[in-house]
Image (cartoon, rainbow, N blue to C red; front, side, top):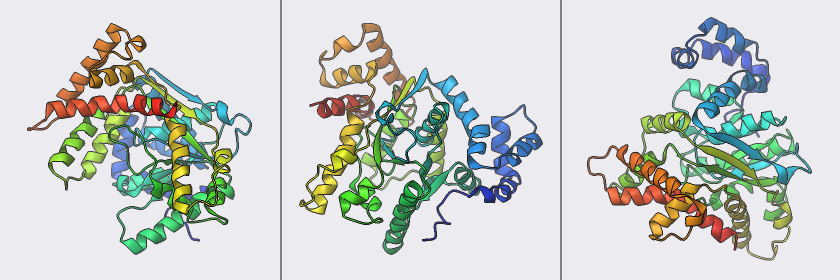
Length: 380
């Protein structure tokens, strides 16, 4: 199957792509804003010296993401203990989705810090607003998920995407990161879309369990103490409530990307769980495919929910919504005041002429309470 339309660039294609980027005025404008004290010709020379995608990532992406984590987080951590028996195997990391860029970006820099290869990254074509962005993400080991296609083309695209992910894992022996759903969960109640697993089983041999097992799926739980885009998500939730046909514009996507990158995130933790193959093997293969699929989805959800790292704000939000002090032993009065002040500040950032403050406040609190709610259910 021909993957040229969606795959990352091969290393031998990089020189030509570098020249196209270097000549792009918009790319130059962005790069000079990021590196204001470095002559553009020198940056171009450094790009040309990167002969592999990994070398480019280490020379540019790694340094930028390290700077972002240093300036806009209190800490950044990754726990791969569950994979310690086979740390360098090719895994399909399926995670909840908090930030458009940083979920996969932070994962990559922490993998590099621990001596591992970076992952290939699934990215929706709705985010590839300009040609230079599409080129840049394909240098950064991203492959393209095509969206908003006519039905027949969507089916063909899904089959090709499934085959590419399987080829990357089993033939290239390259790990892959994939979000558990299309887009971010606006209320942080993370659920794996069945359509994601259906797509993954469009390729391969054997039954549904065999096809999933071949991918070595690892649920990856991502926890942000603060979500800089929370107020933008609340804004979107009211807009969708009041205007059912509301859709984000490319400018909205850019604002979400910029806010996510440059907003304060507090503590950020990534927790890998065990590969689900042993649990998949326990599923009764006499069940219908739909029932098998539902149980596989539940395995991933439980893996993500049970391994959240919870922060004081999660407990404060849960108590604020319930009107109780059920979790008061998990936060101090100062932490409670600090978090509720934060919620009030984020509310004031929502630019809506008819802002429904009680609705928006509830949605903001839900974003922080839902991880705790799901954690408690997973722990039963």
